[in-house]
Image 1 (cartoon, helix red, strand yellow):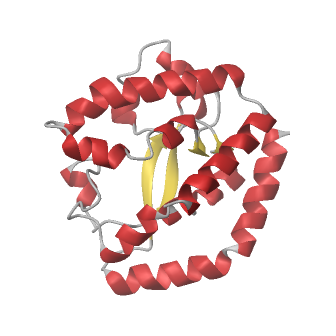
Image 2 (cartoon, rainbow, N blue to C red; image 1 turned 120 degrees about the vertical axis):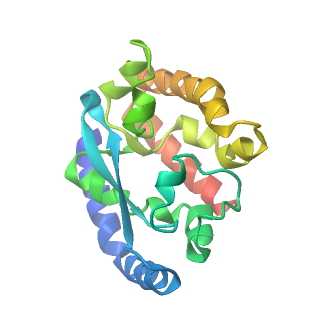
Image 3 (spheres, helix red, strand yellow; image 1 turned 90 degrees about the horizontal axis):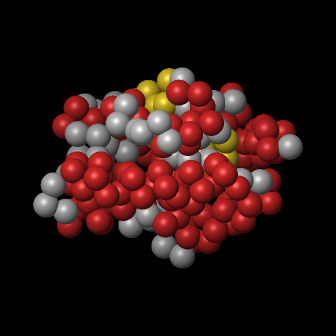
Length: 196
């Protein structure tokens, strides 16, 4: 039932918001040099790598300066990027990943290999389900960039504090997830975006 819903919802979503895709694509191209989409290798279900799609919100090559974005005004973020990140519009292309079966609408957010390699054997169970566009940890840590900006060492703070707590939350999701719980998280996510 979850997979059927993912296919129908992502397919319908891609069709309905295609005009928005076009507008954002033009804006991103006019705002800075580089491709419209940013594709990054993430780790998905069963510990398999896949390419995650996002609208590009940072200058080309910014990921080589670090994987973590800190604060609301990271200088690597483009003008259009500030807007699309604030309202989570950069995540919309992940509907393609959902349609293709690499992701789900709801599930633990996929990490890069560097951080997954740090997981304990218990934490690796978050990879028992498809990663998602939204999850319990994303809602709980909606101000993550601000927390990292306040940290003396953002990378260490993420690895030692934020990541373990997000994994704990996501393991709770893996243990109790259901179709109706997913619907609740989708509505909560929409509510968070609207309230910004």
